[in-house]
Length: 285
Ligand SMILES: C[S@@+](CC[C@H](N)C(=O)[O-])C[C@H]1O[C@@H](n2cnc3c(N)ncnc32)[C@H](O)[C@@H]1O
Image (cartoon, rainbow, N blue to C red; front, side, top):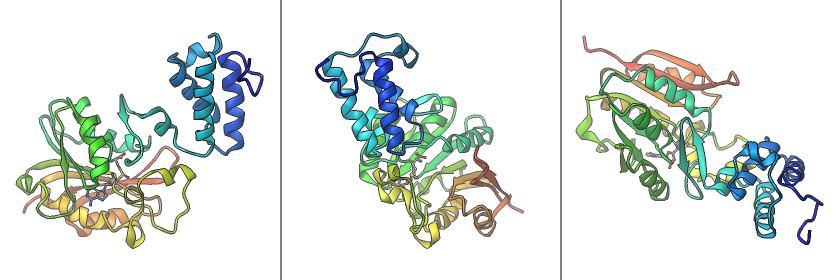
């Protein structure tokens, strides 16, 4: 084949060569990423790639170009334009944070604490992963999604279209934001920026907007005022759950306690690292 630098003829061979290249570049899941890129280019399901004919020259060139970009550690989701999250697919790309699988645990917790017909505010909504999941998995809920970055907000608006969730372009910690809901909300969720500036991150994280990832004050600059804002939004007995850095396993529940929450608890992710904290707004005496 003329454009066949590694001698691969079938999709299976092209994927094997790409997986080798991605492994050498330090990609954490080289085989899966190679298969997903091949599925994206070919339009085939991953399982079909093993038995499919080889790509034509144009598709092979497209695949090679995407593999080359992935080898520079550009996130897979930017290359395919979408991120799988729970039962949905979110459109993502430059300007918006790529949703991470560990955030699905926060959604599990939220769904278990959402009363029938409940009202939810998802603060720091980004692509809308959390708000989208709650709105589509619990159509009885009324969901608002608050995002401050206008670029991310464009992705949020389009991802939430048709879900019934309401996108709001605003600073979630400002006292006027959704003030009309003060004292009435059943559940507040947030995956805010929380990485302390000094922490070293994987190269893929450099493609996320820095305002989505990092926060001053050792990673707590958004979390602290957000706990206060959440306490104002919630009705007594309502719940707040937020994701945090794995160095915040002790301080996160403490922030909840000093902000008026009871039942403050921290939860690990599937790797056993402290990942999100939850609490219930104290009931009125
Ligand atoms: C870690 S990303 C999470 C996005 C999404 N919730 C998710 O889990 O994939 C944090 C998001 O919060 C937004 N953000 C940061 N500070 C904010 C604030 N004060 N009010 C609203 N959104 C904020 C960022 O622009 C970014 O989109």
